[in-house]
Image 1 (spheres, rainbow, N blue to C red):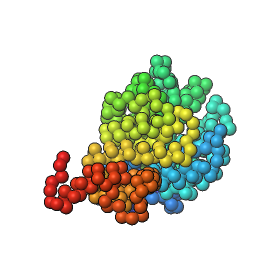
Image 2 (image 1 turned 135 degrees about the horizontal axis):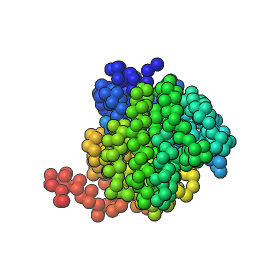
Image 3 (image 1 turned 45 degrees about the vertical axis):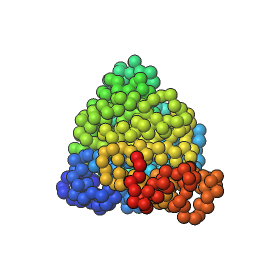
Image 4 (image 1 turned 135 degrees about the vertical axis):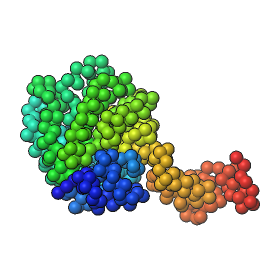
Length: 438
């Protein structure tokens, strides 16, 4: 059966393309054209699509999407908690989920999460490959078997670190943080031990054929992404990016959908260059970035540093933002960290969409502002990006202000009271036919 990319190339508009078009307010033929050009991907494993997946599009022609990472580790493994994280991420609007589990029963965790996940679902197969094995003992056959098993379970996109080559390792000597990608570090160790090229690069054509059978989307991993601002946009990062451009074209030749992963830690003034360079080298393939984090000094607040960078990245060329939680660099996120990370990334994505001129994004801002100007608290809260948190804060303010939160509050401000409220005065001026003072 043909992939979404192959069907788009033949002029066929699939049901998944129709769903994406309706969600995004686009004509189906526009979605088909973008998929055919490789500028838009619809990660939709045939197996997941037959079960519970609602297709979503990732690319510059549609709204910016965000991903939430969850998963067990060798130090903390609780399937119930991961299911709660999944529920929390979806509740606040995550567009995709990645299971980065490295501990516990990986198959059981993946199967349970997929069963409850109606959005695109991704993994990093090399993580399972290493469980119970020494890096040195990994074989190409082992890697292929793990990838095929996960594809058969319904995973929609795989992070594949095929762009990190042996010759790139000599470019790392001046780095502050070296290789911060777990997949990248594992493969670097394998290459040094065996004195061989990256096995994922060597068997890339086999990977393409395997992934094509299930229509699994490549997420070409950036094993040499910078782990601090000082390492951003260095020779190693750019050398790998050029290889990712080559692999993008090879995957397209096999009929596979492709997105490309990117940094990482990037100072604000380098973000535009990074986004535009990827678009040039990878011929418009959707760019999937972690943050990027614009400063290194904010442990505990890195959801904010990444949201700052994420807005710029999405404005200048990224299509997909991976969330960063407050606990980044400090520990595994809990359920509340997941909520905060998703909301911060959604704010970044939405802000960029407004700046990019997407009509639906600007319209939502305007509608909320109109509700705010009318002291329409019900609509104001309903339209918030995180209604649950907004309502909680509003109700706390009502208690302090001695306002009946159940009554229609069209004459009271929970911040200023009645006499000092500029919004209320504006309502009076409009009612009197006057122009409100600026």
